[in-house]
Image (cartoon, rainbow, N blue to C red):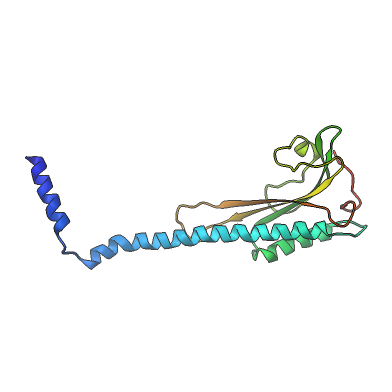
Amino acid sequence: MLYARFKVAFRSFWDDTRGSIMVESVLSLPLLFWVTAATFEFFEIHRYTSAREKATYTIADMISRETSNAGITSIYMDNALTLFDEISNDEGINQLRVSVVRFNANDNKFEISWSQVRGVGSLTALSTPDVAEDHARLPIMDHGEEVILVESLSSYQPLFNVGIDDVDIETRIFTAIRFAPQICYEGACGPQA
């Protein structure tokens, strides 16, 4: 009996075509605005990530083409972060770590020739113990081969409150040294402890 009444009331509600545009607007517009804002935020996160990847690739390529005997200097690294900020079109919180990693086949371990960090954040300069056994994250290399590892860390802060917290964007690029036998940092070329 109760089921029959419920069925009749539901059918009557379902078949009723009368409505109020005000009620429908109040119900649907907030959802429409949220979907539009969420779509913008998801697109912006992907754009933000893409810009940082391109900037990191540019810094890695720039360092790999160095031929100067003086090597990379502190001023060069400061300007690399400035260039990163310009390419990514962001004056926000960006951090850049550049390291030269060498492989020692005798010990089957990686060594750090030098590592420098610019910007404010959680990245610190790498040392040999940090990468010695990091075979899962570092490329396969021949004995004595060096690669340039460029890492960036940025924090994306959403414009709208759609349920997304701040997102850390990390980028990691390897590149080979192209024109010089080694890339030194202010005279430091060999493995460091």
